[in-house]
Length: 146
Image 1 (cartoon, rainbow, N blue to C red):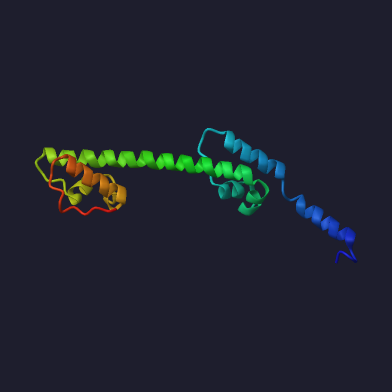
Image 2 (image 1 turned 120 degrees about the vertical axis):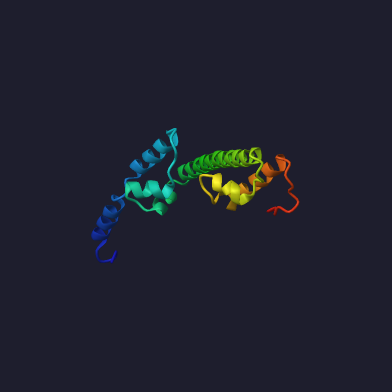
């Protein structure tokens, strides 16, 4: 096709490349990095701008890496805060039961929690085991997940 219609081929290529506004994509990535609010995932940014994820990653790998690293740090921080809150809630429920003279079994602690499935996670189970141990209750029969 290029041999017989070089002008048309160049026009097609030019028109195809004009579909992508690389300056806008770069500006949006820099805005996201400069903002203090949460960083969305690259695929969400690309979808918001009307492009595919791979186009953004291929053209701006450094900005995408910076954005992904910052998002990862933020998500890890939020997770740690959430886990600290869960541990605090478990300790509170276990101590409340212990003050009433009731053994803080996992079932009873679950009934006092906002989310009864918290103790099914490794962190929740460990927090329950530690709180039972700190209260001086027997822990020799408790399962430990390593």
